[in-house]
Length: 355
Image (cartoon, rainbow, N blue to C red; front, top):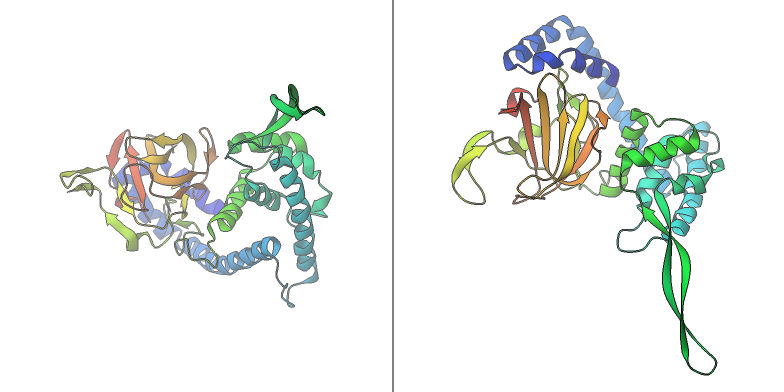
């Protein structure tokens, strides 16, 4: 059901750059396509059950447990085959991880999440070359070190030896390019988005642990194609509006360039519209870890104070793609998302755009 929403978003992108035009086309679309919108809502309600089903499959594959008796034999086989493949992948990842030096180790969860997104439901996923797959997440370097040995007479000697070190790759774009080169098949945006979702489930525990924000695991897209960055319940967590306010740090009145949405650290942050990532970095001055997306026709959005960035500069995203995880980095007093909408460089009130 994502295709109609994405097509609609692209069709009205130019009108979105004007608040008047955005509201006009939104009501026209709602009136003319109301039967379609109702069908979308109906299938999304069915999809919520499918989402629970998919989350259960992830938990069964990664955490074990008894597969319910009512699950079809084919689906049961997929779960058991993926469990076997992940067990073998753990072994290979551990071997590669032992070659990593320093505090920044190999992200085993990321490796397994991408593997799951690519191979769940395929015939015998364990038959993949797991070593080559894991190698896509590191670069190997030849290094030298000094080794001290003790002689029989009690004296010591120092010698230089060469060894191989694995350096983790943090750029997801590079990782996906490596996987494409190894498998001979490009990793699609849909597969990347699925991998992001699986990763967030595993890393931040959206099911069971309660660390996520309710509703944030499903994109919430309005009739005009604009997606809420945190899900349908954004209205319930607005802590600071756009415009003049009392600064929470200085206590002085000053302009607020966006809208603040209080969500727990680790809540998935989604792209508002299709576009291209132009910034994915850390700003010491205020935003902390933040992402900016260019949606074309002068319209850009910004997502600030994140705990983790999920996309790199140049990445093409769709409405609803997970681009970051919420946090409290930069000039922040607590976990929240600072969300901005800009038209031709001018900051405007995000409330006029949020669904």
